[in-house]
Length: 399
Image 1 (cartoon, rainbow, N blue to C red):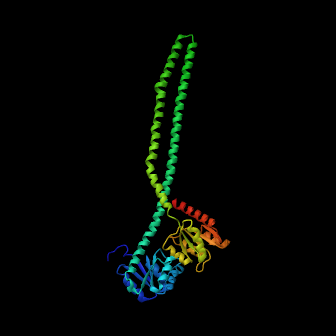
Image 2: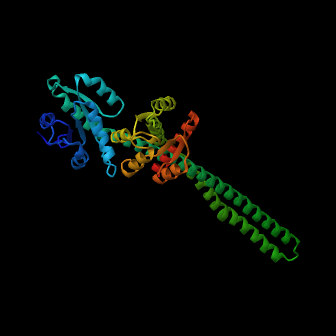
Image 3: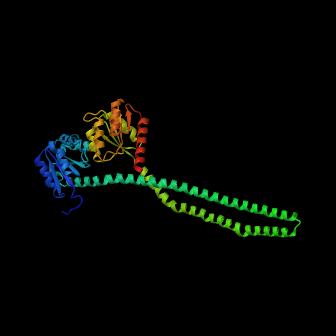
């Protein structure tokens, strides 16, 4: 087959049955050039890190084993968390509903009714193609949205700066115009006074020669004012008019572009922040969902630290609400793993605790936790902290 980008993708099949793994591998090799298998749970992390799969196929007839395999990747690979990838779960007819529920919860990306294989043999390939498209498109889409928001904000800042500079320019022009008019008036008045004094001095003099000389000086002063000083001042004053017109034309010329920036900013504002809620308490997840959905947030949920890592491999939230007490890994351990992975490290984490133990707070801060919420919390406290953290994160990204 042709060497398209999809055909060159790395595919890893995880299974506890060599026969089933071989069957799936044979089907996929018709479309993809790099298909590998992982048959031993003890070597799952090593296999995953060696092949760097973009799509992980879980070919376990017992769906619990499929879940355990994925969770094992995150438990055992704490020093080198799995890179972003997509997961496809194979199931039998009896397991369709369970597979759907697991995918709906965000534990896996897609499921395929595979047993019996004759049901729809090409459905698996189609799912893999779809997951590759999602893997490459979703990060780009969120990255594009973030870039648009960032650039739109800068353009709006440019509008403010331009408006400020044009206002200051008009003020300088007006000030200069007033100064020129004042100078014209003061010079004219000074020359008039000097001319009058010369005339008065000459009228009191008994010597005709000084009178004639003073009269000539008065005439010269008048000529200087009318021919030398005032015309130059008039030119300066007249030159300010085009500057005022130029300032107005600049604002008029850029206005359509600023309108586009405003429209872009409005579109960017419609991209609602995504929050990943990590909490093993179903009631607490529902309570948090009720609060945040009414505030317009996009939500993802994980019932454990391992599920959280699995979700992060498929999507990038804007902030993580992390419960401290969880069964498999506590919030400290999950946060440590998140911050150790470059792809996730910049995501703000807010720790949710039932108490404010000093050691927990200090350890969390050392790991990079940006804030804390103590249970039980109310709507206003949660929304206020999320808003502050997201605003700080947006400012950092903008700069």
